[in-house]
Amino acid sequence: MRDLVFPGGTAVLTGAAGGIGAALAHGLARRGADLVLLDRDADGLAATVAAIRAAYPDRRVETHLVDLADAEATDRVAAEIHSAHPRIRLLINNAGVALGGRFDQVTLEEFLWVIEINFRAVVRLTHALLPALKAEPGAHLVNVSSLFGLIAPAGQAAYSASKFAVRGFTEALRHELVDDGIGVTSVHPGGIRTRIAASARVGSGVSREEYEAGRKQFEKLLTIDPATAAEVILRGAQRRRGRVLIGWSAKLPDLLARVAPAGYGKVLALGMRPARPAAAPAGPARPAAPAAEASPVAADAAVPVPSPRAGEEAAAEPGRQA
Image (cartoon, rainbow, N blue to C red; front, side, top):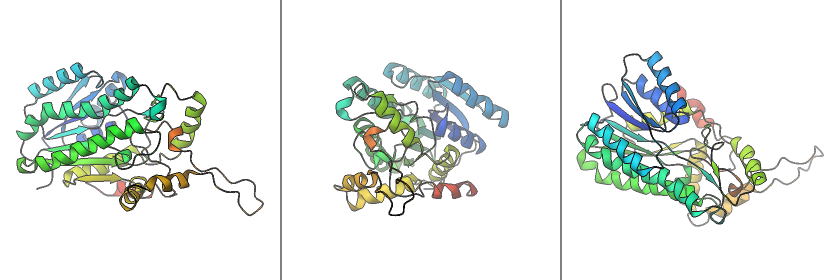
């Protein structure tokens, strides 16, 4: 399959108001694509559009305000997009939400809220816009899963369920759409520095103290710039990569899950234990990262893998051009 050609094509992108989504919008505009941007954050979306129009005045930019938790609204917007754009070159399902808490700490309503946005909205938009992708020669589909679509730590039942579902859905489509000439990429970000952890919902059974302690520690692991992540994603799509892992904070756990698919939880738990006091009389050792169930883990976030170089690969990415 030939490389994806961005100039002159229409790209539909969800979650475009900030983080990786805003960076993807800028990267697509820089590559010559016209944009259809979706988000529920009106102010953030307006800021993204204003910056793109200032930098790339020749690009066509269309926006849709929609809460992807609302199935009817999602279906309505998808129909509007298909009607206005019968041919779409690229669809990126990027939007996602997070929920902190073990399965027994969240309500069924909270659990299904994550599933609706992270998975069912991906299915709805892909189903509605697939005819437009098939009508465009050389089209491509990108679905953003997560590190937690590769491993499933304790405390992430809802989030991991949604992201494993995205992964399985995407892999099946990759095989189904080969004869249609449509490329399909599943993206698994590691520790990306976005606000999704800070804006995560907290399970009804999670104490505020537990949440805050986990959030503050966990945000220290988010080291990769969203612009770097966006470049890795777009380069992967251009080259028709079936799967894109971003950062060693995604690659190492993926390897661990392959080597010990039923036992990696014990290794993760070992890496999360507080460090023993140092032998030298220099004071108590710093504690290790908290267990996953104590964190408001987000999309694009890495579990505490015992590697101090989680952002190393990302640091070299900006110098490589797609």
